[in-house]
Length: 253
Image (tube, rainbow, N blue to C red; front, side, top):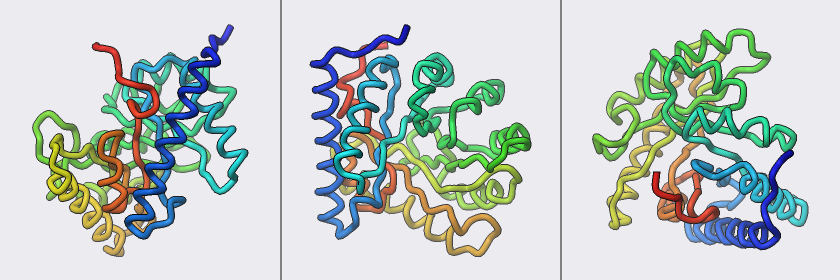
């Protein structure tokens, strides 16, 4: 039997999700952008399936009230959680992305549940995905993850190597290069954080305009999280990944 969230929990999640959408709308207006150009992805690391279902239900109600809104996406960091929660959410058919590292030996498990892998940081992983997706009816969307800050604790290919990787990924069969993802600089300085996001946007523009096969549609910029989504939207984010702003602080691991 599927567990359900309490009425109070559903109300809290609905209010928080509405607040996130309002932040995106305000940031978009300040940047003279259409708020519909920015999707919201719920980062559900450590969030149980019942709370994810409640958030999806709240979002469905919001979309029903305002059809101009795009439904939220779901993002899982860990394949283990993805596989564990997948059956409990399957009836809701959420569009799910993998936003955390993917080991080659977990590719098959991940592909059962996701429509996009945002964490491609090597050609070896991209080739593995391409091989495993050969029999899929449609290409798998992938994003190249870039470490724009250069911080050693962050995943992603170096900025100066990212264009070559993107072009190579775009040429692989069974994959569609959809864009780029990054985790912003950990800093209280919005200008420093924004510099990294601006660099990713410039990289995206260069790759899209390169004329290389398979690159013209690579327009997604997955960047910005609960604490800095306004900075990311200002610099062109098309997808913001929010977790704590909706689900609250994560418990200690």
